[in-house]
Image (cartoon, rainbow, N blue to C red; front, top):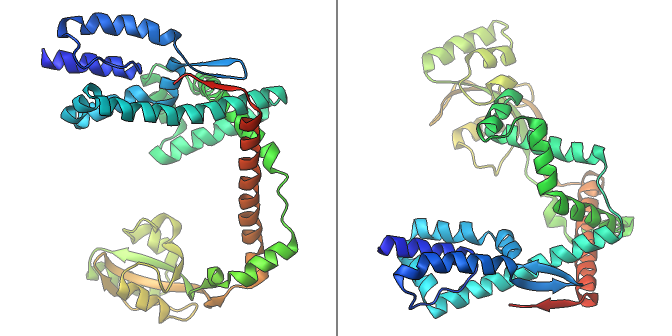
Amino acid sequence: MKFKRVLSIVMILALIVAVPVAAQEGSDSGNAQTQQSSQENKVAAVVNGEEISMQELDQFAGTQQLVMSLYRSNPDFTQVLLQTEAGQNVIKEFQKSKLDQLITQKLLAQEANERGIELSQQEKNEIFNQQVEGIKQQNNMTDEQLEEALQNQGIESIEAYKETFIEQNKENLIINKLRENVTNQAEVTEEEMKNYYDNNQSEFQVQEQAKARHILLEDKETAEEVMNKLENGGDFAELAKEYSTGPSAEEGGNLGFVSKDQNIAQKFKEAVFALDVGGRSEIVETQYGFHIIEVTDRKEGGLQSFDEVKDQIKQQLANQKGQQIWDEFVRGLRDEAEIEKKL
């Protein structure tokens, strides 16, 4: 009965309905059904005449997932949270915080609609393609594997997933486009960039760097074999692909630029910075195995020139200005809006 009672309370609270502390066990299930129906019709706020329901707020805040996650990790704490007045107050403050965010989103969606902002088919395609590529890279999937995974979740094809993704995220995507339209007013002058560079030069100090590649072997015997092949004219990149056990093997052992303050094996780093461009190390042993290292390029340390970092500064200042413009824009919408909160 105790387990049934806890689940009933969780179900009720997930619908953002206060649970009476003294509720009787036998009435929990009936109360949940009655209050769920009431929940669907309850209004959390009215924004310029448009209602936000408690159900919509619950979905936005992810309350059900939050409560169930808390219950799985700490049932006793969840019971206290749900069955005490102090716990109810915490949940109500959480609701209020999320309601403010949802009101802002609603205002932005209304503004985008008034401006007639829409996504072109090309924009939808680009956004979705980025989404798919991100999923594939994160999970190391091919197109076929992704499609199989979608089918296992009841989604017929990538095209069907595309329709669902665009529809479910339409409002946020439109708001993102509104933000681009608003913040493209941000302009950065040459003088502003130069002033930032002059006043923040510590940001543009760089350590000496060396571009390195290596072949990583598990034992010294194999390392000596590979070294012998190199000394007899073997191609470093091809031998790395064939022999190296490191993750950079497919790239011919290329590690990119390594800096003196980088957190890598000390013996490896010492070997890298002891080499001139075109130089090759002896066999270097670290905790990862046996390395043969070559340096293919170097960059001196010191202060980067203004021209080297100009684009970086421009982007940084444009982002800052854009954020300021956007914050002022959102405040203006809220100041001019008719907002009635019911919580």
